[in-house]
Amino acid sequence: MSKARIEAFSDAVIAVAITLLALDLHVPDPGGSASLAHRLGAQWPNYAAYVVSFLTIGIIWINHHALLQRLVSVDHAILVLNLLLLLTIGVLPFSTALMARYLDASHGQNFAAVIYGGSFLLMSLAFFAMQRHVLRTKQHLLKDHLTPEVRRAVLRRNAVGLLPYAVATVGGVVSPYLTLAICAGVAVFYALPSTTFDVQRQAPAGG
Figure (cartoon, rainbow, N blue to C red):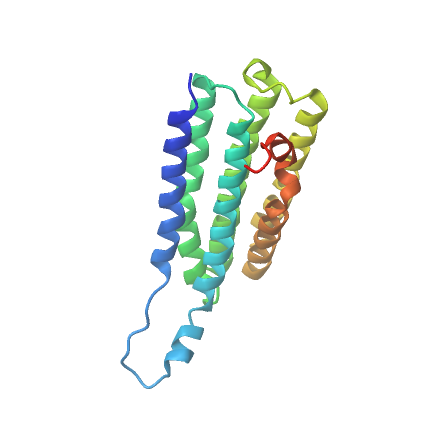
């Protein structure tokens, strides 16, 4: 089965999710005695949650692209796992808005952080499940350069993010800022080029 449709559909869903994040960035009402700078500054939780979630979805898009680049074609099982991944990505605008709204609130901030971290954990588990399925059970659909050593290295890199996201979820009980900081750290880690090292090696010169 050709990869073209799964790539197009996935790109569309990810693009919608990443765009929806911006809907929680509001222009302050010009009325009132506070300055514009003060009112913009008061919205810092929205900006912080937006940046972390934008980076995370962007990194997922990059690594999802790398995952599909390793494949020659896809089958029904890969399509189903991809739908589950997109389901978890589609939830992120909601959990991001929830986190932004409650981050500096007097109550509910810890539960909001648990939901936020949990949504990232679910997304990472869905991506890891898809990656593991592809690399462990669908070798016949993979490109020739993916030796067993390369497949193991890719899976190890993917597994690294699972524990921090679990800690971020549980850490929300302690502090929502801890959850946000851990999620930001994971996004920075996966932004490093080494995450998709095998795909970069196969890129044509000048491409």
